Length: 238
Image 1 (spheres, rainbow, N blue to C red):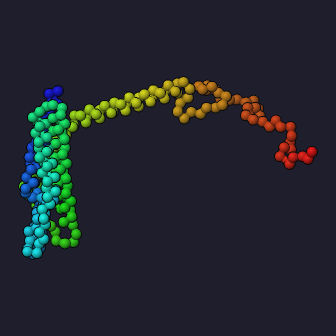
Image 2 (image 1 turned 90 degrees about the vertical axis):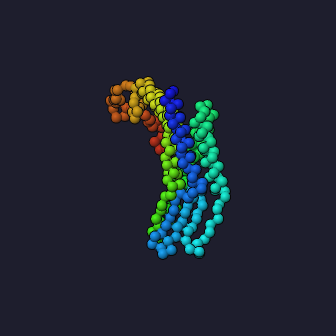
């Protein structure tokens, strides 16, 4: 029990630390793209919640700030931080469920930001145009570390229960497989034949003697007993 409590405490600590490391992504950009080969040397600054800022000449477009993604990003981080803090301080069942939900929500949000960053890099770096250079900014480095910590927290929180569930399922499958083998063995002992055996008519199951006939006509399962040899001709007129 002490091991379980220790793993839970460390998992909650890692979760709280991971969410704290992800908080700077609210204000500061996570990464930047530049094109050194281009004469104007434009720069694109990306935030984890979807904001894009372009630094270039006066002709560069000015992208408005999307309020809804920012609000969702802030709410998820605040709720994740509150839930993991409650799970770290309290040891009740409800507090544990709340802490686990907060750690999972924070991990999904951070993983989403990292995945979108990788997809954007692949998008802007492809093609036949000038090669773009990606620079991960301090907020992005904190987001990467947050993903590692939150993943480790979930492993500590769910690892032991997952192992127990997997072991229980394995035992059930083993018991069912053993019971099926016992049923097959009992059926084979009762009938005296194994799987794939052939039952010959006239022999008892388990009798190893083969049928023997003294003449070729003996043992034929059916014979023609009709006295009428011309049975296939048209019916006779009365």
